[in-house]
Length: 252
Image (cartoon, rainbow, N blue to C red):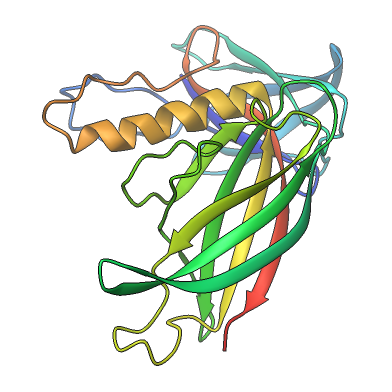
């Protein structure tokens, strides 16, 4: 059985159940609709999740910070699967965001300088993404960065997952560049850019980091295969907590 669930304190519980396929299997990832799904908070049973549709199980409850959550799922023909994770505390502050136009190989890009403050001595796990908003549509914005904090290499990426190892309990400035200008340089493709900073549990970080590596390797004939992280006992998938900060910026 496969569990897929990223949970955060701003949303109610949603768990997706399906079953795995072999590498050579071309079949569909059919949902598991006959499971019993139990949720535990600090090892105390708190809810049975209800089937909504197509392997989606829900609860009206929301996750809480500083609580350990365990999910258990059982269905005929499968081993009982389980997993543990938590909602991380908010440990990063965005102090300022500066933008400027830069020229790179005769093309103009929008450069972002994002000043952030990491709070606490622990190891923290973060992610960063950009979205463009135009005429009611939201689209991911690919970016590149030579910043050692992000460590994404020279290619364009849709997201970057990183830790606070280089700026523990201190302030740093993260730099990245995005191609959001019209070809003639007359204006911007989007009306608004939304910067998203995510704080991950360790499990969510390991999954996202390995998935980014998988996406990079899948198109490289010479790359070594990448195993995507899973924290599901007796199964596959991910059960991980996160929280999100959003910073919209008008461009027009």
